Length: 167
Length: 202
Image 1: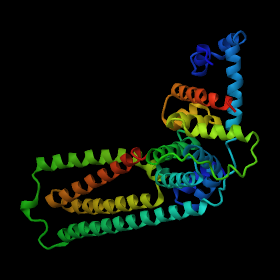
Image 2 (image 1 turned 45 degrees about the horizontal axis):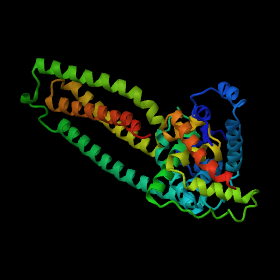
Image 3 (image 1 turned 120 degrees about the vertical axis):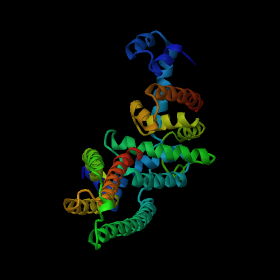
């Protein structure tokens, strides 16, 4: 089904529309939430809150921006709000020890490093390096200039580089 | 390890071509490129498996809760609007059908009648413009909210039509003119609400 048809279903309040949206975007939303908030429980809460906000605001989505940009804009606001209210969790995500990730020590160091980044640097780095968004898109999601996105990513990389070079 | 040329390239103030020309001669920049590549490869591996199936039931339950809450709120508002519309139409009809309607003191003088007719025309023009702006907004609106607005506008149109019919017999009647103007104002405000409402939503 085309994305525009799914959005039309959602506008009518049809659960099937939201289920299809969830199938399409759950993985990157959960990944981003996990990296931003540090644990799967908070990431799941953030995704749930994002969908409630989408439900309330879908009537106002005019299609001038890409739907994924609009969706991630909502999701990042939810994550950043949650980070302000809660102390960021320093523990690793639940799946870490179970996943057979090569170069485990390096990944562990990187996760710890990402968790310690300031909020905006973390948001820009996660969207860029983990989720693969373009810098201009990240600017649209976070409501900041592309130049500011580049600066945040640059500073994030500076901090993280020194961490992983020790591994 | 630091090179200002690398910083300029990474923050977008130096072109890729100029940077690569510099990097050919700068060991620091070449090492920074290597470290960045290693960092970004490691970052990509942070995309670990997540359980998406287990999260949907909670989301669905929340959305159904939202839908029920919104429907209950709109039913209450629809009921209140319908009662109000019936009361207004009832008052208009009672005045139209009551014996001795209209009494001579309720007639507008000719100049005042001309002014009132001008005001009605101004409302009609504003309404026509707002109807054109509101049509696409209503199409894209949440179905239940759109139905609520269409209901209200239909009720007001019935009011306006009854007043117009009554004015054919009694064009100078103050009371009917007053109800007509009230109905036109109500329609204009409702259409404005529709058009203005979505600009606050994103």
